[in-house]
Length: 134
Image (cartoon, rainbow, N blue to C red):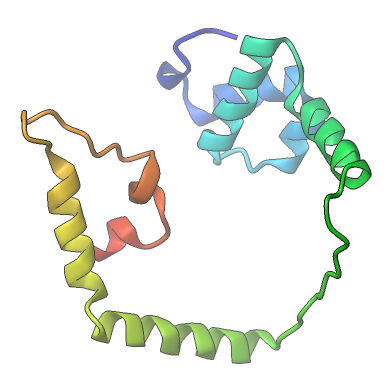
């Protein structure tokens, strides 16, 4: 796995992952380059497939549970859920979400030395809706 993954397009990255870790490749969408790159980096740096690492973690997590847990699975009609989400977003926008995002962007864009600290693919910039609201 090369060090300069940024230079490869999503198709080449996915093809490489499919060859090295087919199980992980089948779990990821070919255009999800962030996760595909992460899987390749794990393989490159550790020599281990991410699918194996995750499988081991899953197995040991159940063996080493600290607390007794009860899991609830909630179901909701898609139309009802969509309406609730729309109302929630509307309330957030009315409460100043756009202005908050603009202010946050301005604060993160440059630090005191003028050095760019906002990375489009890391942190808040990758959160759902951040870029769309700017």
